[in-house]
Structure formats: structure tokens, C-alpha cells
Amino acid sequence: MKKTTLLSVALLCGFSTAASALTLTVTNGPSSSEAGALTVDFGVSPLNNVGPVSGSLPSGTLGGVTYSYSGGALFNFDASSSLPNGTAARPVGSTGNFWSIGTSPSAQHGPGIVDLGAGVKYYGFLWGSPDPIGWNSVTFLNGATPLGTLGGSAVLNPPNGNQTFARYFNVFTDPGEVITKIQFGANQNAFETDNHAFIGAVPEPETYAMMLAGLGLLGWIGRRTKHKVA
Image 1 (cartoon, rainbow, N blue to C red):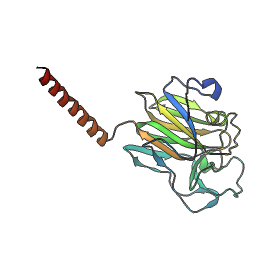
Image 2: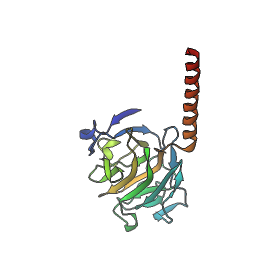
Image 3: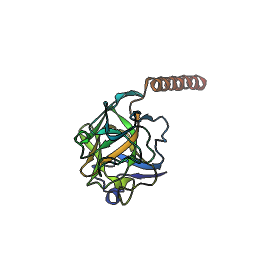
Image 4: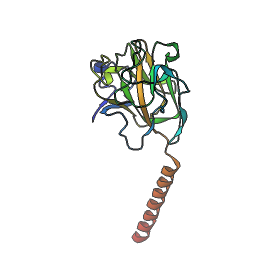
């Protein structure tokens, strides 16, 4: 796994970032390999070869993170489907539904927005048919503050829309930063993704309990040490 900071590859990959608040990796395969990551796979619906899948985009709570998706459209079609250029193309490695943000049909118009409540420290997704930043872009935000914007060069250089194996894109925040919103945009051709995964920035109750137990143990050890010295 090769890890590179957004700031250090800004010139190579077409990044726009205010500060080195994010770190990225690109891994092979259709899903996240991060321990503890929880995945939104957009579900499975009957095969649809003519247009967007009916039904709402996912929302809910996983691992203490409240999430919701809006914009774009869900698709589920096989490789033999004949769809207009720029409508959608299944990401390599994707199964079931996938999310597509594009310029046509109207139901697919972007931007595609992911709201992440109190925020996450890690976010990843399967990136299909990487295109240049002038065509496709993804922006990570902490509240109203952009943390970084990038295009298909992040996973394929040059980003020509062709794909022969699954590329999974991972973003990690620096300490003290969180990602609360992600915006997917497409000015030309579609931005197709699947298998979105995240890890919450706020520890779950079980983690707090372990921390408190650890602090209690340290206090007990400290008292015993003090008594022995005395």
C-alpha cells in the first residue's frame, strides 16, 4: 500500500487543498481493507438496463455515524447494456447497485452529496472510470471548510476513463480534523462509485468504557507505587 499526502502530490494529481489535513491511499480491490470500516454498498435491486434504479438513496446510522446521500442516481446493469456515452459505466469490481453522478439523464444530475453528521476520520470508495478533475471532482469538507478537492489522477494517471482493475480510494484525516461532508461533481461524463466505507471520528461508548477502565487501572497502579515508596 502506497500512502501519499494530498499536499505533496498536489502538482502531480491535480489537487486543490488548503492544508495538509488529509492523507490518501489507493488500494487494489473493490472494497475497503481498513479495520473497523463500515460499508454502504447501495443495495441490490432487479437488473435494470435502461436507466436509473427507482428508490431513494441510502441514509441511516452505522458505527455511531449518521449518514445520508443525495443527488445523482443508482444504476444496476450488466456489461452488455447499451447506454448513451457519459450516462454511466459500472465500476470494475462493483456488484449490485452503484451510485452515478452525471450530466444526463436529468435524474442523474449532480452534485452528489454525502452528509456525515459529526464527522469521520476515514472515508473510502470504489472509484470507477477515473476522469480528469475538469470532468469529475470530489471535495472533502469539515463543515464549510474545504479540506481538499481532487480528480481522477488520484487513482489513475493519466485519468483517461479506462479501467482494467478495481481501484479503491481511501482518505484519512489528520489529528483534530474530521470530514463532515463530501461533494461528488461531474461536468462531463459520469462519476461512478460503489462500496463507500467510513470510520467515525467520535469513539463509541464501548471505547469510552475501555478508556475509563484503563485510566482507573493506571490510577490504581500509581497508588500502589506511591504506597510502596512510602
